[in-house]
Image (cartoon, rainbow, N blue to C red; front, side, top):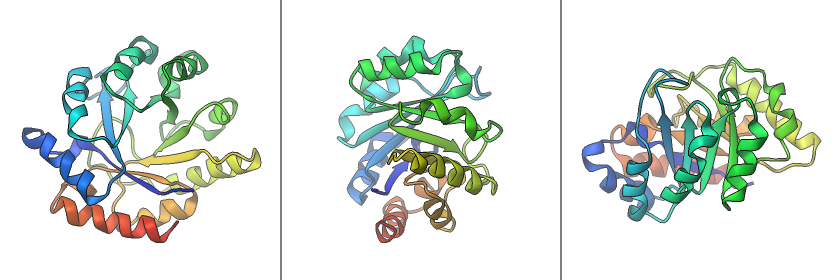
Length: 220
């Protein structure tokens, strides 16, 4: 299974966002993680479709769009039109997760489902063979720069065990508090798509990406 770095632009400098996206691209990151927050499902507001559309021409890398919004099915088509390659929504944000998954797939893009730290991993069981990626939040969604929740390791292990039991090779993404210092722990637990915001964009971006990629490549 391929290990992938997905730098979160939530921690980027928006005055030079296009430039920083180009830098992580050239340094070797394969995804660009885009957090969309509505101020309702989570307490923060980030950015939406106009920003995604405006940065789409800065890179050909995968746009990994994580929508933390209420009733997400309303906007799936718009995110797809703006250039999303993967749309990950929250199990807790809708009464009908399967309808959201089907809507995403109907537009020819990959679907991911995410759970908050307080949500039992068992709720994912009906969707394990329906999605392309599972995002296990390793902090409470809504703010960047939070500390990694240690119990997340066991949650990732549990999801990977469930996937393995079904013979599924589905990607597991982790998001929140991931740095070079702890990325090996989540990789060993079974995650393979690594989101990092502060760990990439704070300091020397190229050096940070290369340090992550060195670990990810050696764990393949």
